[in-house]
Image 1 (tube, helix red, strand yellow):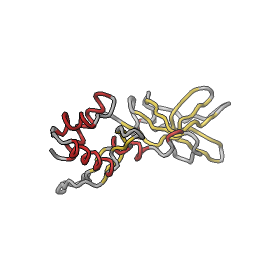
Image 2 (image 1 turned 45 degrees about the horizontal axis):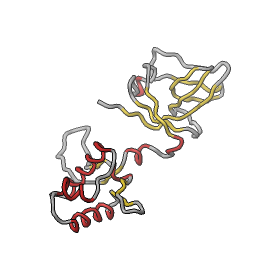
Image 3 (image 1 turned 60 degrees about the horizontal axis):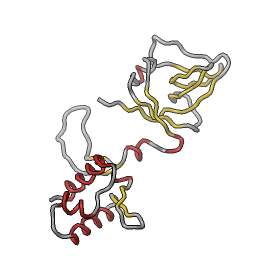
Image 4 (image 1 turned 45 degrees about the vertical axis):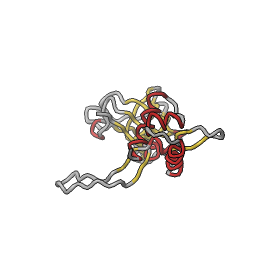
Amino acid sequence: MKYEASFEKIRRFFEEKKRMPTYREIRDGILHIASMKQTKQFVDKLVEDGLLDRDPNGRLLPTRNFFGVRKLGYVEAGFPSPAEEELLDTMTLDDWLIGNREATFMLEVKGESMRDAGIRPGDTALVERGKEPKNDDIVIACVDGKWTMKYYRKDSRGVSLIPANPAFKTIWPKEELRIEAIVTAVIRKY
């Protein structure tokens, strides 16, 4: 059985059972071989490749790369071009999207005020606390006691929060403005 197909079976086992398989379960239910030595060699290769680790008792543990998604190549968004599939890298979405794990959280988007920025109701905004906002950053702000997501703009008149939809008005804080986080990514599931 191929290395990748066997590894995918281990990932499916983990997703279904919420635990790593034992060596015996890998031998009997994944590799379908009689040799524990070959099973250990297969697991050693997964450890060497950074997909698995072992605890001090030798039990298998998933690594960050265990959950990674393969990046296979590029796709032309303009004129069609020949498609070639080649493994470029493996990364987790966390590696790609999250700079500071402790300061990052997700919010579900409601409303249409950021529609023209490509942010729609039901999208998930990945936001990071602790960053200083710059003009045109999309921020999560508490303005006069109410929460909103808008473009941040600071000029000689002060700070304003600007929607990305002409049906909504620019917000000028009257009493209070707290920039809580900056939007670092928006995720949409189809």
